Length: 69
Image 1 (cartoon, rainbow, N blue to C red):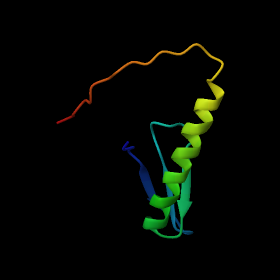
Image 2: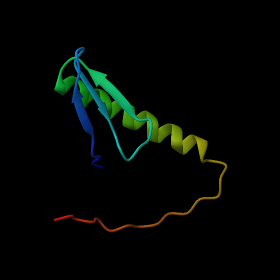
Image 3: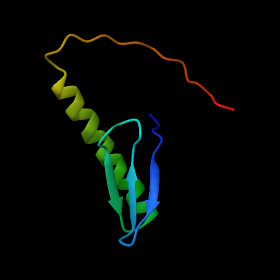
Image 4: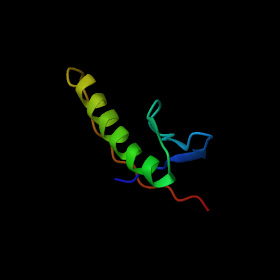
């Protein structure tokens, strides 16, 4: 899967976060390091979300990709 991430240069390096996953963020000394670190953060976020919803009644829906011009 692909996730849109936002990247911001800071005094310490780079801050990075996923707008579609509230609270999912990371950082790194370089842009490349921050991109690698956010991959781990996304995986942890999704695993936690799955664990928290195990006891809930769930459904799946399919959404087509929207392309903005």
